[in-house]
Image (cartoon, rainbow, N blue to C red; front, side):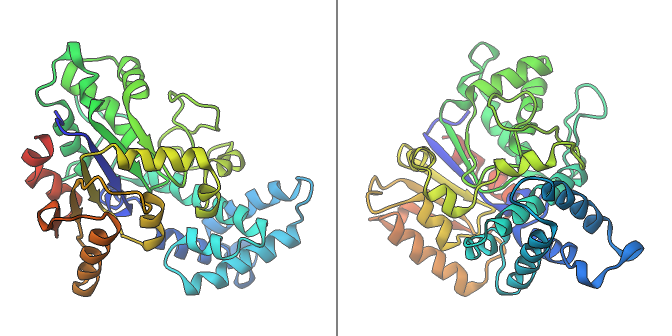
Length: 342
């Protein structure tokens, strides 16, 4: 049970633990798949063929032509050489809405593919099991942290002090948590899904590839593990660019409130890109929360930069308010579980 108002800020490293692609991997795969000019006929890769089929559907819509769509994919492919994140490439080419459209299409395709091939299955193999393959996964530790000490009659308390900000396009957290409740409390799947839908406070600043079918909302939905959904073109509209997010006052308020109302901030699998930090906090951030930063995978100079940036951006007035931990997501939740539960 989490006893302190906590906001968990989740980055790509968390999804990579279950073998979902990073933003860099999505960028590289998109650039490769969109390199139509080096392919011809049967030489085309499977990803290129799938994306080309979707481009042909997009070309049927008013205002789109296959030639202009090809030009947009080529613009994205060339720009990829100057970036490490696909959302940055899309933002850099915001003068061309077709670059935005084809970039989002590539994201939707590769995240759907990543979910289907990840260590998180659509459902458990056997009753009473979790849908995770064998291994050490932070999602399991999060589930233990949320349910320990909470009676079935007060299951809402699992979610009471937790907010999540996920910068990932996948829905791994939402898909996994109902199975946590099934395992911990013997709930049925519909009951567990309903409980998560009603009580989980989660924000995806850049959107997701779509709602899970049992989640509330009006956007297009897609099942976990569906690598080639029929409504791929509609899923594109669930994804937001940084610019689109910044112009959405309601979304920005929801994001900032999750930060401001928290007494403890936990960054895990996070890359600490200045663009994302600026989205999370502004000059009014001054309530001096306790901050735990996982920095696994960052170089020495980058770790030093993170410490300086977080102290400055979060206006931390005491050194003991910031803890910097060089640990993977699983290790952070396992080793600091007592602190996170307190």
